[in-house]
Image (cartoon, rainbow, N blue to C red; front, side, top):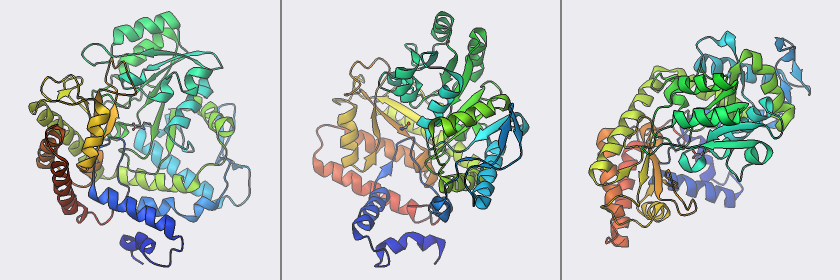
Length: 442
Ligand code: DSN
């Protein structure tokens, strides 16, 4: 069976669970007929998908391929169960590739590839450096931060004392405020990084502040990791002490997370993941991660990242020309935050309303708070990004078309027929690109 047809089995009687096959096939149809503009979603290659569904999934592999003693790796099998030959080989390969991809000098850093996703990776970082009740700082969720950076409903603020910083009136990180808060609260750790911030992050400024108060600097680069490794965004190293990232967003790998730290923190990070907060690692996800790391080392990946950024810039400028209000006024990365309420021209009720309307038009986005939103459950914005569309091969011309279709779908006076016609236009556009992408899981 060719790699191209690997998932065709779902359409045959060889796959006996018809209910599951039907749902998966329907999801494939949905992904093939709607345009994904959610900045944290992407398409994986079939190689990544096959590694993800490999027999490595059957293996329990608690522990690490190495053992620690006094902050130094002593090279012995640190796994708890027998039968680890291939589990150790795949974990070591993922670690080696991850360090090569994310650091200039792998000897200075340690990587942990066992985190099940971004949220456990961030919790593990806090668990490694803080005791219960200790203070840390992070960007507030309604200003573009992440739940695990100390939002009030998350364990990170229930177990630790979370101090939240925000953005200034221009929608930019406010380093004066961050420094003032750091001097006042003396956090043990400062998280930087975001999920809805369209500008570059100055890790060196964060590092200056962290050093002043003796805090660990943790950079969560889940959204921008691809930009950092392609040198299209400042790299968090050497400024950060530790970085976390998911591997399934712009990196186009499995749903998983990694933590890379300065070597002196390696043992405490490893202990924090296992036995601290997790049990057996997902070995098939680690295999898929190794495949994705290799894909991201290829020159084509760098071209991809450059195009992601060009596309986001054009989409942002076109939307602005069409009357949309862009939070922070510009985009410097892969995403755009639209303030759809305070725009003066358009008649949009709120972000939820627009996201639902766009879905009817075949355009998939997510509602999002914008800085200063008072009602997070009815946010004033939507968040859009270009990683997935760029993976399909779309470029500037398609971004201009998409901006116009978004505008058309936004106009309140249009009937359901208009939305349906837009969705057909989207489907035709997607067909053109999907046909050219035999190696993607779509
Ligand atoms: N849910 C992710 C995102 O969409 O950015 C963050 O965890």
